[in-house]
Length: 467
Image (cartoon, rainbow, N blue to C red; front, side, top):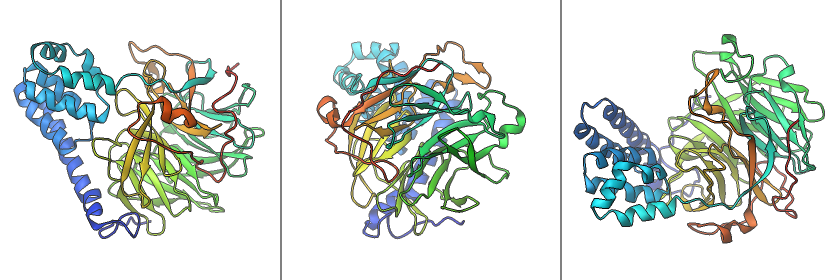
């Protein structure tokens, strides 16, 4: 399917033309210029030559914390107090860049100059925010969990495993059952999982990744959506991505109320649509797609909100396949978002592309063209060092806190890494406004599918433990 490049309107017909001008061509150009400057900085011969390139990248794409963090480190080493202050102030606004607090050069310059106020603000804005608690534990430290969803009919949680190529069911009583997907042919790493509207089956994405068990070179082309029967883990149906010259990595997915399934391909990058009864996947492509991650269906089913790791939150109009970037609220960033779910007037997102990683609510305007505000819900780097995807469950947001599969480089664990049991953390949404250091307030939410989770027992479950 050919992509449509919007040139006149936003995701909604009521969106202003000025919003579109900022959200397509200008966004792609600014991001490309910033990346080019950042690459050039890595090749510069001296720190004096590196710093201007890093500042150019940061100013061209000011919502990218990684650029500001690099600029601050280099500026501190050449004792450029003004540049350090600019970078630290930007990071404090974005609530990212906590590692600078331990940087010896930044500490030295802070002692010698008047950076204390900016550094203190950065420290406050990146401090731990412990609103969530552990509600389930998979004791095996090599599960490498990625996706998660909840079944509103049974209260069960379903956790996808990259390493073991399967899905684990955590029952309402805390018991764990392995659905044993790996028994079926051509099942690779399992990344995304969502419960079907009828509650009887799961849709999951699978891909061939070197860190999965029994990987072979032939698995590199594996990319598919499968439908899994919950009762026994049998594969009921399968839809493969056509083999071509591109690499494919199907990650997260979402299910609309009418049963249409949407899945993101991070590598290609492509957004796939699987209509009810279809035998093949439809492709939606757009210049704003660079590293697609989570998907949320906007109520009514006419639009999607899609997280692009490099470009931020995007709105897809499903009637035209047009795409716009949802503009950030002032002083905030929507880059580095992994999983998302729709939550009344916006999305709750796992944002692991900033440091420290956090769970945040991005409240949108009614046309899904602007982010109105950002509510920080949970930030616990000691507990949730590598969060990925979450779901609405029992009146809270349950998410994979420490996926850990990126601690492996192909078949070998990266030096210096320590594996821990896999943790599922839940943030009580009814309490999040009162308990967090928010930018603004939020509201109740609904699931990616047509059903809403029970809310009578907020985030309450006995700790689960895998066999």
